[in-house]
Each structure stands twice: as C-alpha cells, then as structure tokens.
Image (cartoon, rainbow, N blue to C red; front, top):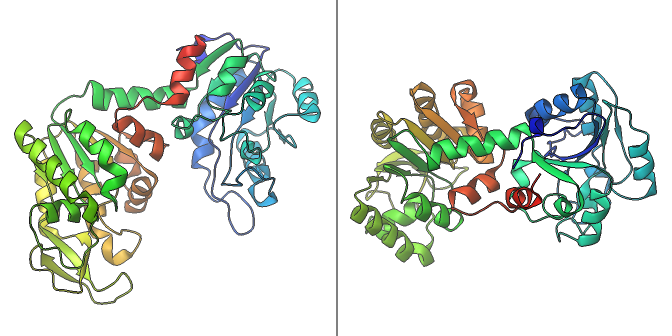
Length: 394
C-alpha cells in the first residue's frame, strides 16, 4: 500500500473516503468537529498539491433512504469555515449532476458528496454503486479508519474501479500505532478491557491474551469472570451463557502465566438512578444491589499493575461513567495512563469520551478514531477496507 504522499495527485481527481459522521446540535449545526479535524492533514495536502478533491462520507443511519436530517450540509458548512474556502455540497453521490459538479472542479477545489448511506447499495457493497463512484476519480484515497471494518461500496468495492489507491494520513497513523502497540510493542504490554458485555469483547480478549504481559478486565463484563470464579456479585449484570467461556479464558491466562486482574471491590447501588451508593468488596454485595463502578481498592490494584507498563492498550470504560456517581474508577485509570512513561493507545467511542471528560486527552499517546475497527484489529482480523487497498496495488 502507498500513502497519499507517495502518489502523484496534482491536477488529478481524487476521491477520498472520510468519516465526517459528526454529531449535530438541535439547531442542525456540527456540535463536535473532532472527526473533521482528524482528516484535515489529508484534505490540506490535496489542496496544496492542486488536486481536485471529492470527499465521500456517511452521517448517521438513514438506512438507504434520503432523509434531510442526515444531510451532510452542516458538515460542508463547518468544513468551509475551517478551510477558509468554499466546500460545495453535491446533491448526491452519483448521477449526472454529480458528474457535472466534479467536472467543474479546479485544481485545489473541494467537493463534498451527499451522504453515501442514502443509497441502500452502500452497505451491500453494490457493484454498480461502487463503479459509478470509481468513475468519478483517477485516484481513491481511504482515510476513514472508522469504517474500514465494513465491506461497503465506498470502502471496498470502489477500489476495483480506479487506477490507483492509497491510504490517507489518518489511516496510516492508525495502522502504524496499532502495529507498534500489538505487533511490535515495547514491553511490558498491558491491555485494559472494559465495557458492559463479554460477548462484544470475547474475540479480542482471546486474541490479545497471546500477546500481552498483563490483562486488566473491568466494567460490567468483569462480573461474568468473577462469577466464573465462584464469587458472589449480588444482582450485578452477568452473561450466564458466557460463564464457561470466561472460565476457559481465566484458565488459559493461568496456563500462560499471564496475570489477569479483576475488580476486588465495587461502587454498588440498587439502580443507576438511586441516590444511595456504597462501596463493597466483591463477595459482600447485598442481594438487590448491583456494581456500577470499580471501587478504590480496585483502582489501587490496577494502578500498581500499570506502573511498569511500557505499552498500554485500552478499550472500554470500567464503569457506568456517564453517571457522575460512577465515573471515579474510569477517570482514575485515565489519569494513571496520562501519568505513565509509556505508549498509551485508546480505542472505542465510550473510552474516548471518558478520557475527554477526565481531561487527559493531551497526555494519551494516541486516541483511535474507530471503535469498531479498533476492536476488529484487537480480534486479530483483517480490515476489509485495508485489504482492498492492498489488492488495488496503488
């Protein structure tokens, strides 16, 4: 695979798949432009090189229908403000009007296509849609790591219908950081896996167990592992059908000599909304009470486990941090990572949000822009979007 700076793009029509799926305010404006800022290096490079840039993105889940509330109009407006130049929004992604808009581009111009997911063929990797997209450009650049685990027309299919393909700067950075963290880490390598369900992280946990020096598990899914050890978790959320899987993971970690850390205490309450919260050791959680955050003893345990880490990968919060009462554990581990002399990589929307709220963003080495794609890599799977670029041979 070549990166964008290894291709001759001056004067050429460049179709760039980006992730501009920005949250919108009630007034219909971009509420958070983080995803726009993430792809600015690639966009600015195309402008500076005098390419004719065609941006392709989705926004929300219109499910193959043209729905005004999912228009990329607000994104075109915000991107125009950031660039200090007009970014025109085409009325569609394909068709005669789009072709005219593309032909009208001058060197250094930027055109944003309307939401690609207005077409049902996008998520089906439709051959015809991919062909019409590819025919708009000379070169295809993928800079949308967040959708690289999706075999969609604008991610995979389009690569068959352009002369050259390459990675944008963001996608290259994502893949480079992941390689540093998992495939060629400075050790000790510690993985932190959190979140609500074992089922959503099972593949990742099984895969990274063969690569890490320590594994820390938190969040509601830790309850299933504790239950597998015979620990009473009160009425905390567990996945009964995965207790045996959890037990086998614990046994494998033991056989490999990999320390696997589980919570020893929790902040418990009768419900998320209940104003009464207490701290209890696991094994002493009263009937009717549930764990919603790791407790102070667990924070101390996890901090000690992280002290000698040289590489840390974190996916999934360690409690229901969206409620202030249950945010202390996740925020404490966030601040611990921020203080480490280590390569720290975070992936997953909820984890990113938690670190933002904790105020530790600037101290984390790299925050991935794609939760699903990041988890896909942790599972040891190939990303269809990256594989397509390799086949393209650009």
